[in-house]
Image 1 (cartoon, rainbow, N blue to C red):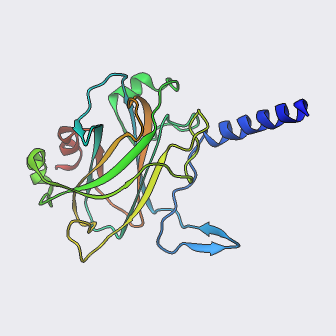
Image 2 (tube, rainbow, N blue to C red):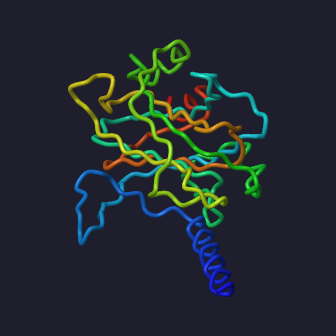
Image 3 (cartoon, rainbow, N blue to C red):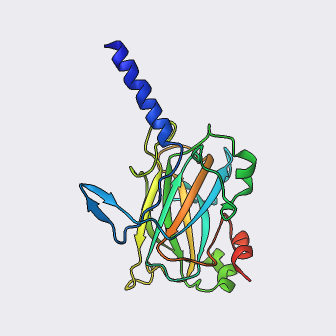
Length: 231
């Protein structure tokens, strides 16, 4: 009996470790089908990734509703019928930035650190009135409207602890509601930890769209975003 329990625990650990090695293809809500009780999704046509690292004790971008919030600023250059946003911490061991990915300076210096990670909680917000790149400079005083948020997702791989505390959400554009219509403009992905604890360690954030978004930009601050998208 003890041998069976031990074997089960070893197998469970192997499964958790294997699941933590990568992210599966990111499928969209549009056109999803149920086949034999399983959801089948077509992968997003466009997928951009940001690899980042939050140093232990790093000051947040904002304290909001008692939470230490950090932001990734996102420029959407075309109307998107849907956006998918997901985040994993730490960065899965078999993932590494591609040449087209966005990479934070602190990630490059700390990519080998898989000890620090956090229970991700993400939001998507849209800046009111920022509809062209030349207006990004005014975004520091813009009003931000929350579109969606997510804490835990069973679609994401487990963290090293074995808990499913990584985040994923899909947002469909609401054309009848200007604050939730996924039109050209400035957005931000906010992230923090849902439970008590610090935001620290490596993470990868991915933004998916069912249409190509040439000129999309993703950065940890507005100055860097302007350099990416303002021509």
